[in-house]
Length: 413
Image (cartoon, helix red, strand yellow):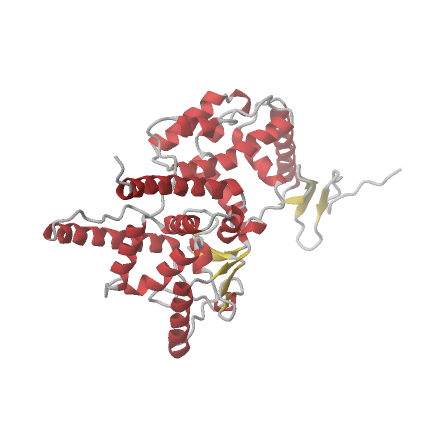
């Protein structure tokens, strides 16, 4: 017959309970639903047992509610995240941030079994209209919410995924900003660079902007590029990581921080050939830093970052976008006055961001290159459809230009 374990007072301890000899603290050790060993502590055995009973009740209630379809979307999302052990830290934090900010406090409290297709459509429309979100942000939210519902489908908690087809429906609605980023026209691109190049106020941005417009890099790839990633001899740029920035909004990151992120797909790791403009600005920048000192900022063990702000730190993507906005607004104001004096139509630069520069580079590349596979590899597109969409847009513009040229050159009517 097994002998029951007892505490120092002679009371019989239950399964999972122990008492530490060092300080007399009672410990209850258990296995959570994820298979992880956890412990709770208390100096009073009776208080500990109250916590044990509540813990067991919570676990049973949660599982029963989930099995019955009565659990909330929040419960299922947390369960979904617990299954995604393969996610990189940066991706996990981004998913958690988007869910906590836009879903958890409102829509996430609804019972998952009660959600219908129309509920998701209505929720997305609310985010677009009342919250003022862009379609690109909504797509990120959808990429978090859709697999949450899909987990419930696979666990036979609900029959169908209520978020299936919702984004397609949202994009069909007239008047919506579908998040399509249009490239700068050639004259707009040239006007922007010329203005920066000749401006004593904004000249310091010239190298970074020429790099972005001459490589098609994502902003994270550009601000994270290091001298060791540059091969001057073979005129090649090795893209193998990004620099990501986390704002103060996320509760686990009370301070703004940078970190290194690896590409999500193999397509992101690539070699970009250097055109002459990029080669020249990098050579000039290298010579300048050789004389004045290289950047010593270290992030996750990486050093030698090429592009820095006036304080010697790596660039914040938000700061770069704000600088772009100041520059084109300043240019437009001067251009309107100048064009009026010269009695011509002004060349107005529309609103654009760092990512528009990537789209602009891709459009210029599509104008001179017909091999979609080459374009896809240079851009690092994981999906060839992304490349095809941009190519199709450029092709439509080229057709219009061709017809205008044809009308001017053929005097046969």
